[in-house]
Image 1 (tube, rainbow, N blue to C red):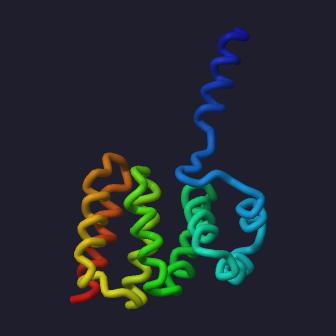
Image 2: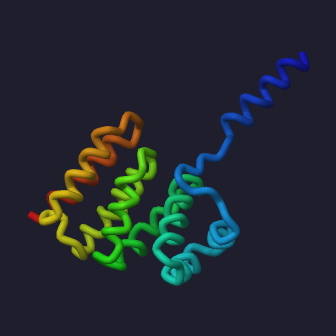
Length: 153
């Protein structure tokens, strides 16, 4: 009987392990997610791009329910975020991170703050990354890319 309990313990522990993707929790991240949603939205703009990126990824890949509301706050900064996010997209193979970067680009497109139709390199990179995905987020990511493409028409 004790061996069954130990196996069950490890099965539960393994199933409950948090997924952090490309971001590990820090004091800044932990403090941020202790705030209310409205406080988070106010505080988000006080962080630099790297910190915002970490907060956004952690909030969407670890916090439940996900902090998808941060995508709009990130996107409201306009075209200044594009080179930063493109570099992050180029360097990741993590499917949740590809999905989340695409979500920010989708918000940027819906706000009409960047002309994706004239950035063939970025659109090709987005499609390449999404098409390389194998998991459950592939179709969602491809749909967001399709919406980005159609937003300029």
